[in-house]
Image (cartoon, rainbow, N blue to C red; front, side, top):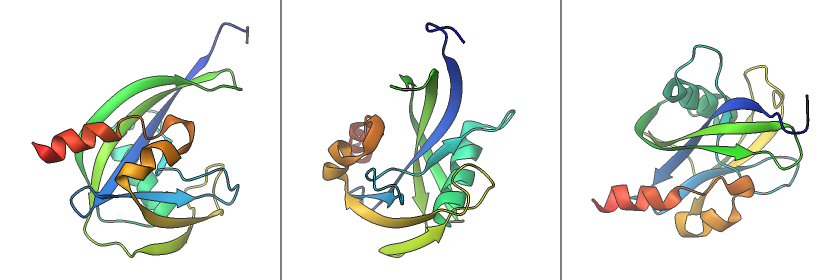
Length: 147
């Protein structure tokens, strides 16, 4: 692959909130890289909204998720790999979730078998704390919840 050519990889990202949007669900991967939102690849022919619910279940174990709204779609070039992520962000609601739990990732992907510590973080703090600009559209959630 030449220097100027980047493969586009489709990804779905979940902004799962509770307490009227005051808290955002994040997880801590074993790499210690920093908090992330649940996210993952979109399979060929899969709708991004279906993918985000599947990825949320695989990465956190939460099975009763419902997509509230599509938030944004962008393209984010990976800083060290020859790929660009087309990122589809969704606001997602879950009926019930504990304050903190550990989940072993399922689904057969590269993270399969890893253990993620899932917890809630203040939405206002999450934007700057999330790695790889994953919090780029949290302000859009505030606007929706204020409407």
